[in-house]
Image (cartoon, rainbow, N blue to C red):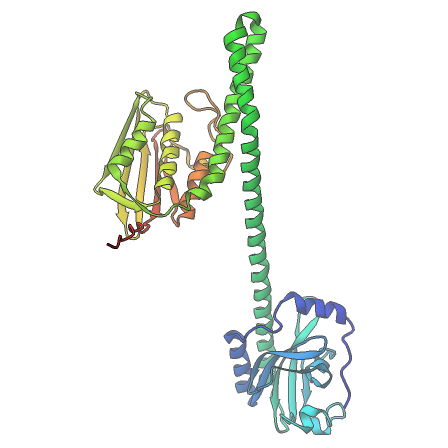
Length: 411
């Protein structure tokens, strides 16, 4: 017997094999189907997908064979990875000096015929083989050889797909981790800025009230800049905190929400605006879902509809209906509308399409991003229908949640 040598690029080959994270994984139907087809086409009782590790050959799939691995020094496949031919064929191992006294030939399973096609990476590094084995001498026709090569390509396609899926999964996990870190940073930064910002606000107000007469016009203008900047920064910080805390809002379970009380709650928050006409339309009397989430979504949408409205009288209609396992909400306004080319931006955090609102204050692009985040975390989706000069309709759905039952008191 002649033991196989290490591949000329053994270190790189083993690193490539390791990159697929395939060794010692559970059987998979896709690989088993390929070995079954290979055995059928070649008319052999045994077929395998063999991967050559540092000290063994391990079978990802073994059709007609009980063993899951063998030592590398007796593996036929360990010879194949060093061969430059398209296919490695041993017609009768008993007469081949490399294998005649090999334990796999002299003992079980008594390998006589072997044919293997190397499984190579795009860089040409062999990982193992797709092979067929018979217990008697055999020849393969050109059609069988061609089919075996084609099946080996499909094995590599499966391995590449596995690797791509792993990389994609890792990228998603990394992105999720970075997003979570960014949100934690935004929350901590915003929270820590609140105290010094409140001091700036208070100091600016005291200067205005108590010492305004001692400032010249330029001083008063500069003081106004400080006040306006601190107010804008307060809005940005509040928005960041709301965006960061939206996750905690979702922890609340389902509860029964009386729609009349919901209307009163929302209307009460905007009662200061006498130019607002707010209508609630629904055939439902109540809904079962996350109350805090619904409040935050509607408050953001109504607030936006008011701030960016260009009419003397702001009209907002909220409609609620049932659609299967979801509640659907439509929030319509009579504002200036949003051009089609701008509609893809409005749910992106920090994206604003108007420089200022109707009160002359700049937006921060956080409110609608918060709404989208909450809706999607609750298994729903949100979209906008609008045209320039024709108002907006925001439609979102929220999955119904089961209201937690009151505990039964035993007497």
